[in-house]
Image (tube, rainbow, N blue to C red; front, side, top):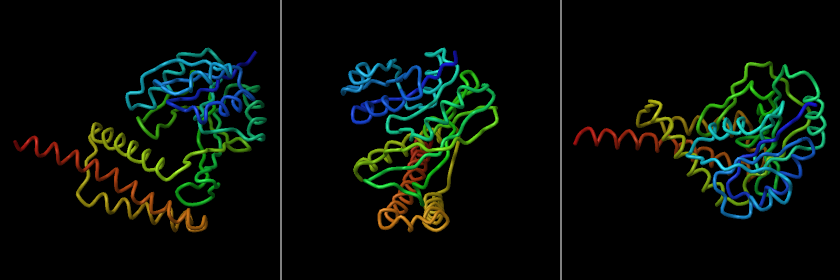
Length: 255
């Protein structure tokens, strides 16, 4: 019998994990949490809900977490979800149909962002498409942050969508932006990426033009407009952090 394992990475997700597990169990034979050291009630809630949890230190590398999960299941298929994501009814039906077929494809899911109490259709948070459902053994992940799967199978987009519940407050956005830009800068620097002093300005302006005009972020009203400026700031911050690492290295060499 074909089996599907839903894999969820967790770290202090007590607000989301109960609903995420209940939703995942609509399609999964097994729900597996890869936990990086939760200190809240995440593991207690998961155990009560019938999910499995395995500890694995994060060390700033999300791709390594997702690859590690593959060693913890023998299911025929794996579906990756985040703790703040849920499948709508149409997507649940499509997933069940997909895993009942031959394991000759990977499947892409449409994802709609729900943040600050509303759903976004444009700009920086417009719906995106993410490969998430794979025959186990056909996929591995790359990239420490904003990781992406590598799979050689043909990709098919499933009907329905994922509801992605992201930020409840602007403070939460700021905390995550600071964390992710640091990881991006350190990883880019380690891989040899170097930029000029003007990179933060040029890249951030280009990013703003893309989300405000090309992706019509202004159509989501004032929250959408504000998010376009947030995207500008996020892009500038990650390049400024990379440039700062270069300056530190140059000063060290000059001593």
